[in-house]
Image (tube, rainbow, N blue to C red; front, side, top):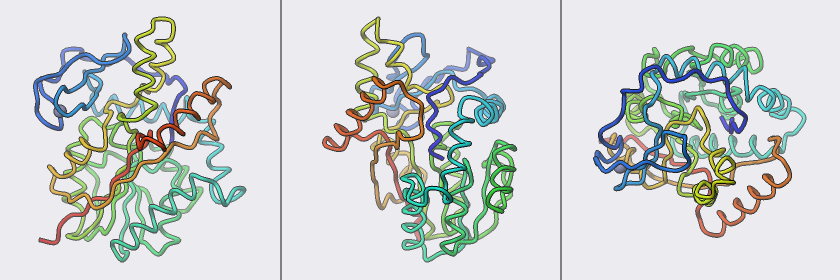
Length: 306
Ligand SMILES: [Zn+2]
């Protein structure tokens, strides 16, 4: 989680350039237009404003990229997070954020089994166990899973969430910074809906495309000299760029009732930005707070009791 990844990743090219979407994943509109900085192959839905990479890599390509990401561009941040989480910096902002998620889920579900999809460092699982949840991770990167187990002693299923052998009666599922990495976010939400017990709660967090950060990036990308800077917010292993509205739409379509939405500014503390970029992102975060267009969107959505 929170592996905001600005560094370049060693990515293989997408295998089949013919796999292009004809309609929007969320609303089904065929009104799809090119979006943002060339040469990124982004498209935007004219109806619900979903932005996505087209073509999306296959699930196998995505798995290979996520494992490379754990070893490659984000390794330094990840290493530092292991140091920071819960040991040297008990008041770390990311730890505080995860604790808030766990607390909210405990309040709204009463506890039980919590499954974290895309575990990152494993910290959320650790905090979930501390709060009294039975915890289980599901992670596509074997190295990430092994590291979390060594570090926190948590159980992690390695593989694709869509095929995972999940326990019955799951009270809470967390997907922080996951949907934007998937081949098919709708199937991930459908799988979460099936797996949750009635009354169970799903937590989702994604980068918010309707934010000052992305608005600024899209503006910059129109200026040839600054286009490279603008395109940096479109991270190579992010394929879907949601807004709170179209994320909510997709959650409701898959059967959930959205009970709470929040926005937050990403914590910039652990990333190695140049001073002008750090200053620019800090200003955009501050503007995002004032305008309610912050760069991360979160939703808590319940599977109805019926
Ligand atoms: Zn749409």
